[in-house]
Length: 440
Image 1 (cartoon, helix red, strand yellow):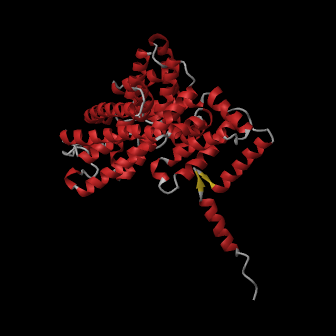
Image 2 (cartoon, one colour):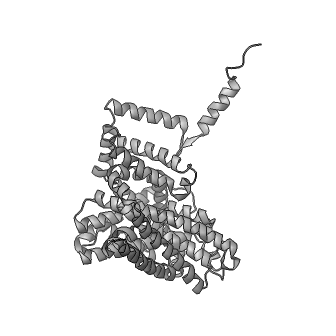
Image 3 (tube, rainbow, N blue to C red):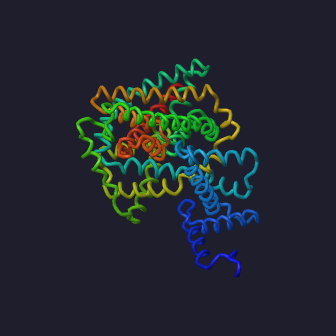
């Protein structure tokens, strides 16, 4: 009888189908491998374009791969593993001199010469703010304002106190540990904050990012763990649990139905959204010359004010939102890889993670969440939901919100979480930058 060691055509077809169905990011595995092989071959033969073409290829390949790994590792995937790997691995490769020089040159040209991160910031800020429902923005912010305000004040006081006990100055604790935690993520928070700090202090942006990133990462991890604890409390004490509803009267049901952004993609509107995002960044740069306030901060203020007073046509807002979704969905991991490679010193990153540093971050977030819990109860909100939404104030942007809400099984609270993260983060960045300018 003939041996059956060689797989039958049907079996081979099944194996190939399984391989083709597996994806790295949005790409089927065979396509990803082919593109990676072309890019590596070009780099080793010194033919990799030293421009945005080569830079995009390297950044997106690395971002898709590290993001995929980080989102699949047990436990790690629940604490922002994708973002952490995208930042840490390139930083380590540079630190140990293991990155191909041609790839590094292409990344440097794309990130520093072409300033890709600025375009990314512009699209994220304009799209995330303009894309919010006006009703959710105004009414949701009014509901979240008391717990956010009181929670932030308490967290700042506790964080500074714990920092002082461990030998940190109040100025360092506030500007370089607490504010990065509350800034709203890497793209929306750390990047504009580092640009503003760099202009005010006259220090290199790379040095500042290395100081700010660890706090944001640790804060996000503690927020996720706190959210899981709140879910457990809600299960044990049903009278504190709104099962996904924030306000006890149930008025938030209609509020959460007003999101007008779930419409088909319009490529023409996306082009308009890209131009509007660039315009906001340019406006911030122009106003900066007259006010002395860093441009990215003025960009945030301008977008929020125009949204509140409804001066931007709804169609244009939708285009900005769709452009934001495209950029955040496809370039976030790539941007994080670039930041890790060029702006995050591996040596500084490793030295930042000390017990004292972790204690300050943990105390800040825990006090924020606890304040949101008790203030929510006082304001006729369900304490568990109020605490969870307040925890999102220390999340890593949209991905951080997803992780925090997933840990508590409260994804329906996403609109309120976005207010806590985006608007709350923007307010903290603006206030911190103005305060640093005043005291410098």
